[in-house]
Length: 66
Image (cartoon, rainbow, N blue to C red; front, side):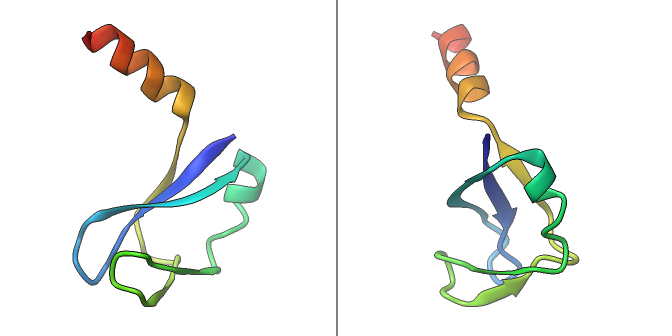
């Protein structure tokens, strides 16, 4: 499972939603809307850059950097 991340169209910042999901669910979200905790507005996912971040990959990358 990964955490859904997107780029806020209002300020261009990367936003983690804290929502964990699998790839099958993620692939069905193209037409969904999501609340943005950065600008406090809902955004249509169509047309936005969004992806999943996997914590185990981040942990591995952090361990390599140390």
